[in-house]
Length: 254
Image (cartoon, rainbow, N blue to C red; front, side, top):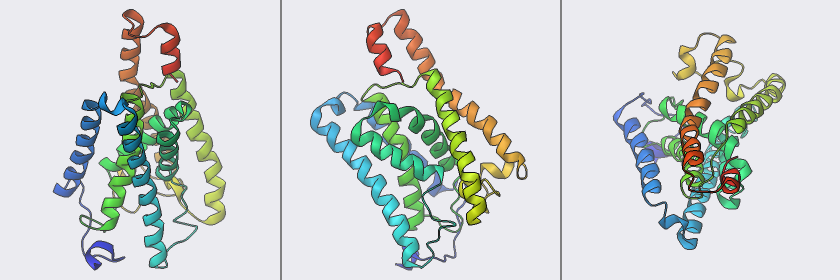
């Protein structure tokens, strides 16, 4: 059991190792599978089952994460509060799939998916490689956020608007501004606002603090626009040869 759940390990996570690439591939297969099954998933029973499965997986991943820290008496308000963007996105993703509240899609899609995708490409896993619990938790939690938003887009056909891109960006920056004084008060480093992570991640290539925060702002805007780009062409196509009338386009675009 130590191999799967121990606090200290003799291994270390290797970027783009076989296990890393396999995890990314499995998330990609789930995304493709959901897209190919989108018509079936619009039926009431499979729709409910998949939404419930995604929500349960996300919730269990978060509960198990805190339970693991508590078991080793390592749970701390300075490191373990669910204040990282991934945790906030996880709770939003759960609410999104359970309620199908379309107003939650933009922030979950832009901020949640963007951070989850970047996190999965350059994970901050330190000594925890496959088959450790933390390895599975990481990809289930981040992959689940992507799947939750992908479900709403492909199955429920809810699309973000360009306006919601900037609203999401503003909301993210407001959260960061609120988190700064909390980090100073607790002596914490939530969202890596006070110093770069110990492991090698994307932040490691963006210069020293505080300059990497400015670089992250630029990267965030670029990634948000890349995430919006497919919808730009999709919605333009709808206006030229619309499968919906104008009222339906407005309802489906947030």
